[in-house]
Image (cartoon, rainbow, N blue to C red; front, side, top):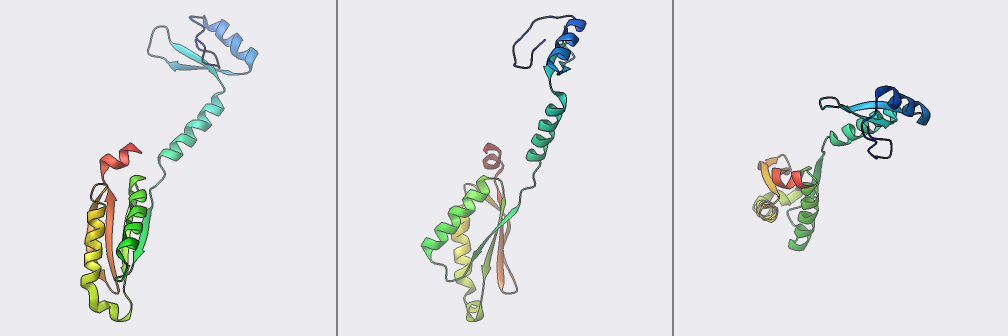
Length: 155
């Protein structure tokens, strides 16, 4: 038997364990039923269930798709700053959607945008894989990056 502070009390008969639980106002919970003798613990079971549900909620939070917006005229340094931000998102396990927005005559310079996208992909190659390659959709060029499994598992 283990008490509420984590101290081992040794082998105690069931009636004595129930009496200790009643004295402390706690529940007697069987934590390892398959061993001989079974291991029981004194704890507040409703508090334990609440913590378990919170832990489960935290672990199953859906990872969002983070968006980074660029323009064809984005300079090299600004592209590096955006790349560092994308790296942070990817290391946390999020997917990153890179949007290149075109206005007016910028549509004539799709080649600059493609070069910027290639630079960004190369900059993030160690933490991301290209889920969907750069492609035009109207006045936008979209690129989807997903974190590598090894990187996402370490956080």
